[in-house]
Length: 126
Image: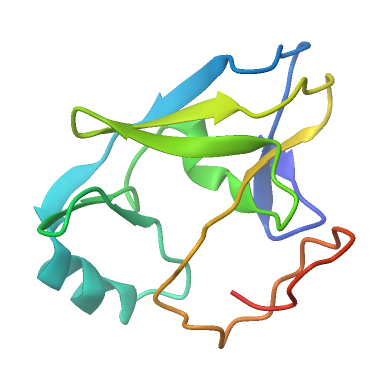
């Protein structure tokens, strides 16, 4: 984890990561989606993933480094919800020192937050 050109802190590969490799997972507090949406309005930085129509995981107090995974419109990893756990998998080979990014997909920002990923074809918003 170190400073990111995308946003604040980011997670960077310490060694080569082959394609389709599990990179890590993130743990946090299990809450309702209703509570998640309330909490999302209270913090400048939102670290919440909805894992089902009714449940979400709040990573705000998590010590897992993967909580600092930033968004990119050209992500090199993806989030996968497996048995209530949020896991990260590489979409392609990732080089040492490269920032690990995921596409956040639809967010509570509803296009109001500027995207700063800098990827070719960036949508410009989250």
